[in-house]
Amino acid sequence: MNQPVLSVLMPVYNAEKYLVESIESILGQSLEEFEFIIIDDGSTDSSPQIVQSFTDKRIRFYQNGTNLGISTTLNKGIELAKTELIARMDADDISYPDRLREQYQYMVAHPDCALLSCWVRVIGEDKEVIRVDRFAAGYHYYNMAFISPMYHPSVLYRRSAVLEVGGYAQKYAEDYALFWALSRKYRIYNVEQVLLDYRVSSSSLHQVLRKQEYETAHAEQVLGNLRYYMGNEYQLGPSYLACLSHNFGPLLQENSVQQIVECLKQLETINEKIFTKPNVNLDLRAVKQAAISKRNFIISYYTQHLGYGQKVGLLLRTGSWRILYRTLRDSLNLRNSLTTENT
Image 1: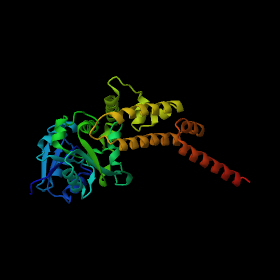
Image 2: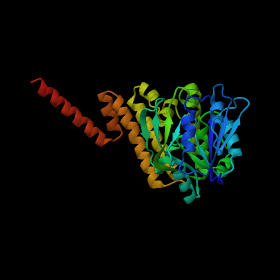
Image 3: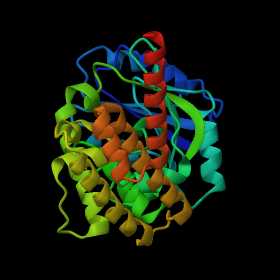
Image 4: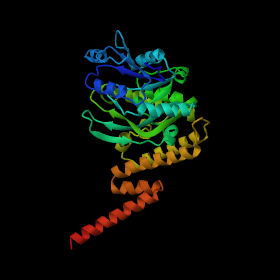
Protein backbone atom coordinates (compact mmCIF):
# COMPACT_ATOMS: atom_id res chain seq x y z
CA MET A 1 0.00 0.00 0.00
CA ASN A 2 1.26 3.49 -0.85
CA GLN A 3 1.92 5.91 2.00
CA PRO A 4 -1.46 7.43 2.97
CA VAL A 5 -1.95 11.15 2.46
CA LEU A 6 -5.08 11.27 4.57
CA SER A 7 -7.11 9.21 7.04
CA VAL A 8 -10.81 8.39 6.83
CA LEU A 9 -12.45 8.03 10.24
CA MET A 10 -15.71 6.11 10.58
CA PRO A 11 -17.39 5.21 13.89
CA VAL A 12 -19.81 2.28 13.70
CA TYR A 13 -22.67 1.38 16.01
CA ASN A 14 -25.37 -1.09 14.96
CA ALA A 15 -25.09 0.01 11.35
CA GLU A 16 -25.46 -3.33 9.54
CA LYS A 17 -28.23 -2.13 7.19
CA TYR A 18 -26.14 0.41 5.27
CA LEU A 19 -22.59 -0.41 6.29
CA VAL A 20 -21.49 -2.30 3.17
CA GLU A 21 -22.57 0.50 0.85
CA SER A 22 -20.87 3.11 3.02
CA ILE A 23 -17.56 1.23 3.21
CA GLU A 24 -17.60 0.51 -0.52
CA SER A 25 -18.12 4.20 -1.27
CA ILE A 26 -14.83 4.93 0.49
CA LEU A 27 -12.88 2.02 -0.95
CA GLY A 28 -13.97 3.10 -4.43
CA GLN A 29 -12.53 6.62 -4.15
CA SER A 30 -10.52 8.02 -7.05
CA LEU A 31 -7.89 9.09 -4.53
CA GLU A 32 -6.54 5.79 -3.28
CA GLU A 33 -3.75 6.78 -0.87
CA PHE A 34 -5.60 6.77 2.44
CA GLU A 35 -5.97 4.75 5.60
CA PHE A 36 -9.49 3.81 6.64
CA ILE A 37 -9.94 3.79 10.42
CA ILE A 38 -13.16 2.04 11.40
CA ILE A 39 -14.05 1.81 15.10
CA ASP A 40 -16.96 -0.31 16.24
CA ASP A 41 -18.48 1.18 19.38
CA GLY A 42 -19.91 -1.95 20.99
CA SER A 43 -22.39 -2.96 18.28
CA THR A 44 -24.84 -5.75 19.11
CA ASP A 45 -25.68 -6.51 15.47
CA SER A 46 -23.49 -7.92 12.69
CA SER A 47 -21.56 -4.70 12.08
CA PRO A 48 -18.18 -6.10 13.27
CA GLN A 49 -18.51 -9.16 11.06
CA ILE A 50 -19.38 -6.98 8.06
CA VAL A 51 -16.27 -4.85 8.56
CA GLN A 52 -14.10 -7.94 8.98
CA SER A 53 -15.41 -9.38 5.71
CA PHE A 54 -13.47 -6.69 3.82
CA THR A 55 -9.86 -7.56 3.03
CA ASP A 56 -8.65 -4.18 1.78
CA LYS A 57 -5.34 -3.47 3.51
CA ARG A 58 -6.18 0.21 3.91
CA ILE A 59 -8.74 -0.67 6.59
CA ARG A 60 -7.60 -0.44 10.22
CA PHE A 61 -10.38 -1.95 12.35
CA TYR A 62 -10.75 -1.42 16.10
CA GLN A 63 -13.44 -2.44 18.56
CA ASN A 64 -14.41 -0.72 21.79
CA GLY A 65 -15.03 -3.19 24.59
CA THR A 66 -18.19 -1.32 25.54
CA ASN A 67 -20.24 1.47 24.02
CA LEU A 68 -18.24 4.64 24.72
CA GLY A 69 -20.27 7.11 22.67
CA ILE A 70 -19.42 8.97 19.51
CA SER A 71 -17.24 11.72 20.98
CA THR A 72 -14.92 9.34 22.84
CA THR A 73 -14.78 7.06 19.82
CA LEU A 74 -13.92 9.89 17.45
CA ASN A 75 -11.23 11.24 19.78
CA LYS A 76 -9.74 7.74 19.87
CA GLY A 77 -9.73 7.64 16.07
CA ILE A 78 -8.02 11.04 15.84
CA GLU A 79 -5.27 9.81 18.13
CA LEU A 80 -4.86 6.68 15.99
CA ALA A 81 -4.64 8.60 12.71
CA LYS A 82 -1.23 8.56 11.02
CA THR A 83 -1.88 11.56 8.80
CA GLU A 84 -2.54 15.27 9.36
CA LEU A 85 -5.69 15.33 7.23
CA ILE A 86 -8.71 13.39 8.50
CA ALA A 87 -11.95 12.91 6.57
CA ARG A 88 -15.06 12.03 8.55
CA MET A 89 -17.49 9.40 7.34
CA ASP A 90 -20.58 7.82 8.86
CA ALA A 91 -21.73 4.25 8.48
CA ASP A 92 -25.02 5.03 6.72
CA ASP A 93 -23.86 7.67 4.24
CA ILE A 94 -22.38 7.50 0.73
CA SER A 95 -19.30 9.39 -0.43
CA TYR A 96 -19.12 10.19 -4.14
CA PRO A 97 -16.05 8.78 -5.95
CA ASP A 98 -14.18 12.10 -6.16
CA ARG A 99 -15.01 13.36 -2.68
CA LEU A 100 -11.63 12.68 -1.08
CA ARG A 101 -9.68 13.89 -4.09
CA GLU A 102 -11.56 17.19 -4.29
CA GLN A 103 -11.26 17.89 -0.58
CA TYR A 104 -7.63 16.78 -0.36
CA GLN A 105 -6.60 19.00 -3.26
CA TYR A 106 -8.32 21.99 -1.70
CA MET A 107 -6.60 21.49 1.65
CA VAL A 108 -3.19 21.12 0.02
CA ALA A 109 -3.74 24.31 -1.95
CA HIS A 110 -5.03 26.18 1.13
CA PRO A 111 -2.80 25.28 4.11
CA ASP A 112 -4.50 27.94 6.28
CA CYS A 113 -7.82 26.09 6.09
CA ALA A 114 -8.46 23.71 9.01
CA LEU A 115 -12.04 22.62 8.33
CA LEU A 116 -13.60 21.86 4.97
CA SER A 117 -17.07 20.58 4.09
CA CYS A 118 -18.99 20.08 0.84
CA TRP A 119 -22.51 20.25 -0.49
CA VAL A 120 -24.63 17.21 0.30
CA ARG A 121 -27.72 15.49 -1.04
CA VAL A 122 -30.06 14.45 1.76
CA ILE A 123 -31.67 11.05 1.15
CA GLY A 124 -34.10 8.78 2.96
CA GLU A 125 -33.73 5.17 4.01
CA ASP A 126 -34.45 3.90 0.49
CA LYS A 127 -32.25 6.57 -1.13
CA GLU A 128 -35.18 8.77 -2.14
CA VAL A 129 -33.96 12.35 -2.53
CA ILE A 130 -35.28 14.70 0.14
CA ARG A 131 -33.34 17.83 -0.81
CA VAL A 132 -29.93 19.07 -1.91
CA ASP A 133 -28.25 21.50 0.48
CA ARG A 134 -26.07 23.98 -1.38
CA PHE A 135 -24.77 26.38 1.24
CA ALA A 136 -22.70 29.31 0.00
CA ALA A 137 -19.13 28.95 1.25
CA GLY A 138 -18.90 32.64 2.09
CA TYR A 139 -21.91 32.37 4.43
CA HIS A 140 -20.48 29.61 6.64
CA TYR A 141 -18.80 31.88 9.17
CA TYR A 142 -21.94 33.94 9.79
CA ASN A 143 -24.28 30.95 9.82
CA MET A 144 -22.07 29.11 12.32
CA ALA A 145 -23.35 31.41 15.06
CA PHE A 146 -26.90 30.07 14.69
CA ILE A 147 -26.73 26.63 13.07
CA SER A 148 -24.15 24.10 12.01
CA PRO A 149 -23.96 24.61 8.23
CA MET A 150 -21.61 21.63 7.85
CA TYR A 151 -22.78 18.02 7.80
CA HIS A 152 -20.52 15.99 10.06
CA PRO A 153 -19.69 13.16 7.61
CA SER A 154 -18.94 15.70 4.87
CA VAL A 155 -15.95 17.32 6.57
CA LEU A 156 -12.22 16.97 6.31
CA TYR A 157 -10.10 18.63 9.00
CA ARG A 158 -6.52 19.02 10.16
CA ARG A 159 -5.60 16.73 13.04
CA SER A 160 -3.30 19.27 14.71
CA ALA A 161 -6.01 21.95 14.73
CA VAL A 162 -8.61 19.59 16.19
CA LEU A 163 -6.22 18.52 18.94
CA GLU A 164 -5.30 22.13 19.65
CA VAL A 165 -8.94 23.09 20.38
CA GLY A 166 -9.51 20.01 22.53
CA GLY A 167 -11.11 17.58 20.09
CA TYR A 168 -14.69 16.46 20.57
CA ALA A 169 -15.65 17.89 23.96
CA GLN A 170 -19.45 17.46 24.06
CA LYS A 171 -21.60 14.35 24.37
CA TYR A 172 -24.31 15.73 22.09
CA ALA A 173 -24.04 18.23 19.22
CA GLU A 174 -20.38 17.29 19.37
CA ASP A 175 -19.73 18.21 15.76
CA TYR A 176 -21.23 21.70 16.11
CA ALA A 177 -19.15 22.40 19.21
CA LEU A 178 -15.96 21.32 17.43
CA PHE A 179 -16.72 23.25 14.25
CA TRP A 180 -17.44 26.40 16.27
CA ALA A 181 -14.15 26.05 18.18
CA LEU A 182 -12.20 25.59 14.96
CA SER A 183 -13.89 28.56 13.31
CA ARG A 184 -12.68 30.86 16.12
CA LYS A 185 -9.02 30.22 15.26
CA TYR A 186 -8.77 28.78 11.76
CA ARG A 187 -10.19 29.32 8.31
CA ILE A 188 -13.16 27.18 7.35
CA TYR A 189 -14.53 26.59 3.88
CA ASN A 190 -16.99 24.59 1.81
CA VAL A 191 -16.38 22.86 -1.53
CA GLU A 192 -19.33 23.92 -3.64
CA GLN A 193 -19.93 20.48 -5.13
CA VAL A 194 -22.29 17.69 -4.04
CA LEU A 195 -19.87 15.02 -2.84
CA LEU A 196 -21.91 13.07 -0.28
CA ASP A 197 -25.32 11.48 0.18
CA TYR A 198 -26.41 12.11 3.76
CA ARG A 199 -28.96 9.54 4.88
CA VAL A 200 -31.78 10.33 7.29
CA SER A 201 -32.93 7.09 8.89
CA SER A 202 -34.81 5.77 11.90
CA SER A 203 -31.47 4.95 13.55
CA SER A 204 -30.06 8.49 13.29
CA LEU A 205 -28.97 9.62 16.73
CA HIS A 206 -29.67 13.33 16.37
CA GLN A 207 -32.78 12.87 14.19
CA VAL A 208 -34.54 10.12 16.15
CA LEU A 209 -32.88 8.17 18.97
CA ARG A 210 -31.43 11.12 20.92
CA LYS A 211 -33.41 13.91 19.29
CA GLN A 212 -34.27 15.78 22.51
CA GLU A 213 -30.73 15.56 23.86
CA TYR A 214 -29.28 16.92 20.63
CA GLU A 215 -31.84 19.74 20.45
CA THR A 216 -31.04 20.80 24.02
CA ALA A 217 -27.30 20.67 23.37
CA HIS A 218 -27.77 22.62 20.13
CA ALA A 219 -29.71 25.39 21.91
CA GLU A 220 -27.04 25.63 24.60
CA GLN A 221 -24.35 25.81 21.93
CA VAL A 222 -26.12 28.61 20.06
CA LEU A 223 -26.61 30.65 23.23
CA GLY A 224 -22.91 30.21 24.01
CA ASN A 225 -22.04 31.31 20.47
CA LEU A 226 -24.12 34.45 20.80
CA ARG A 227 -22.50 35.27 24.14
CA TYR A 228 -19.15 35.20 22.35
CA TYR A 229 -20.36 38.28 20.50
CA MET A 230 -22.78 39.82 22.99
CA GLY A 231 -21.12 39.15 26.36
CA ASN A 232 -21.39 36.42 28.98
CA GLU A 233 -24.56 37.82 30.54
CA TYR A 234 -26.55 37.86 27.30
CA GLN A 235 -29.93 36.13 27.44
CA LEU A 236 -32.41 35.28 24.71
CA GLY A 237 -35.89 33.83 25.15
CA PRO A 238 -36.38 30.19 24.09
CA SER A 239 -38.70 30.99 21.17
CA TYR A 240 -36.31 33.67 19.86
CA LEU A 241 -33.36 31.32 20.23
CA ALA A 242 -35.26 28.61 18.37
CA CYS A 243 -36.25 31.00 15.59
CA LEU A 244 -32.68 32.19 15.00
CA SER A 245 -31.70 28.50 14.80
CA HIS A 246 -34.36 27.98 12.09
CA ASN A 247 -36.79 26.21 14.40
CA PHE A 248 -39.70 28.52 13.64
CA GLY A 249 -42.52 26.60 15.32
CA PRO A 250 -42.31 27.94 18.92
CA LEU A 251 -42.48 31.58 17.85
CA LEU A 252 -45.24 30.86 15.33
CA GLN A 253 -47.31 29.30 18.11
CA GLU A 254 -47.22 32.59 20.00
CA ASN A 255 -49.26 34.03 17.11
CA SER A 256 -47.82 37.50 17.58
CA VAL A 257 -46.43 39.73 14.84
CA GLN A 258 -44.93 41.90 17.59
CA GLN A 259 -42.87 38.99 18.89
CA ILE A 260 -41.56 38.19 15.41
CA VAL A 261 -40.58 41.83 14.92
CA GLU A 262 -38.83 41.89 18.31
CA CYS A 263 -36.93 38.72 17.40
CA LEU A 264 -35.74 40.34 14.17
CA LYS A 265 -34.61 43.39 16.16
CA GLN A 266 -32.55 41.08 18.35
CA LEU A 267 -31.02 39.62 15.21
CA GLU A 268 -30.05 43.11 14.00
CA THR A 269 -28.30 43.80 17.31
CA ILE A 270 -26.42 40.49 17.11
CA ASN A 271 -25.47 41.19 13.51
CA GLU A 272 -23.78 44.47 14.43
CA LYS A 273 -21.57 42.61 16.90
CA ILE A 274 -20.73 39.90 14.37
CA PHE A 275 -19.79 42.56 11.80
CA THR A 276 -17.22 44.10 14.15
CA LYS A 277 -15.77 41.08 15.98
CA PRO A 278 -12.30 40.27 14.57
CA ASN A 279 -11.98 36.76 13.10
CA VAL A 280 -9.83 35.11 10.47
CA ASN A 281 -13.02 34.18 8.58
CA LEU A 282 -14.59 37.65 8.65
CA ASP A 283 -15.34 38.76 5.11
CA LEU A 284 -17.58 41.73 5.83
CA ARG A 285 -19.26 41.77 2.43
CA ALA A 286 -20.11 38.06 2.58
CA VAL A 287 -21.22 38.27 6.22
CA LYS A 288 -23.59 41.16 5.48
CA GLN A 289 -25.03 39.26 2.53
CA ALA A 290 -25.51 36.21 4.75
CA ALA A 291 -27.27 38.37 7.36
CA ILE A 292 -29.68 39.76 4.75
CA SER A 293 -30.35 36.24 3.47
CA LYS A 294 -31.11 34.99 6.98
CA ARG A 295 -33.47 37.88 7.74
CA ASN A 296 -35.33 37.37 4.46
CA PHE A 297 -35.55 33.62 5.10
CA ILE A 298 -37.16 34.18 8.50
CA ILE A 299 -39.63 36.74 7.14
CA SER A 300 -40.48 34.48 4.19
CA TYR A 301 -41.30 31.58 6.50
CA TYR A 302 -43.65 33.57 8.70
CA THR A 303 -45.42 35.27 5.81
CA GLN A 304 -46.22 31.81 4.46
CA HIS A 305 -47.69 30.64 7.76
CA LEU A 306 -49.51 33.71 9.09
CA GLY A 307 -53.02 34.85 8.25
CA TYR A 308 -53.36 37.52 5.56
CA GLY A 309 -53.76 40.46 7.92
CA GLN A 310 -50.82 39.40 10.09
CA LYS A 311 -48.73 38.75 6.99
CA VAL A 312 -49.32 42.28 5.68
CA GLY A 313 -48.66 43.71 9.13
CA LEU A 314 -45.33 41.87 9.40
CA LEU A 315 -44.23 43.01 5.95
CA LEU A 316 -45.13 46.62 6.71
CA ARG A 317 -43.34 46.63 10.04
CA THR A 318 -40.18 45.04 8.63
CA GLY A 319 -40.07 47.21 5.51
CA SER A 320 -40.27 44.18 3.24
CA TRP A 321 -41.65 46.18 0.37
CA ARG A 322 -40.95 43.77 -2.47
CA ILE A 323 -42.61 40.88 -0.68
CA LEU A 324 -45.49 43.14 0.32
CA TYR A 325 -45.96 44.25 -3.28
CA ARG A 326 -46.06 40.64 -4.49
CA THR A 327 -48.48 39.71 -1.72
CA LEU A 328 -50.89 42.53 -2.54
CA ARG A 329 -50.56 41.89 -6.28
CA ASP A 330 -51.29 38.18 -5.89
CA SER A 331 -54.25 38.94 -3.64
CA LEU A 332 -55.65 41.41 -6.18
CA ASN A 333 -55.18 38.94 -9.04
CA LEU A 334 -56.94 36.24 -7.05
CA ARG A 335 -59.84 38.56 -6.24
CA ASN A 336 -60.20 39.58 -9.89
CA SER A 337 -60.10 35.93 -10.95
CA LEU A 338 -62.85 34.99 -8.49
CA THR A 339 -64.94 37.97 -9.61
CA THR A 340 -64.61 36.92 -13.27
CA GLU A 341 -65.63 33.34 -12.47
CA ASN A 342 -68.74 34.52 -10.64
CA THR A 343 -69.99 36.81 -13.40
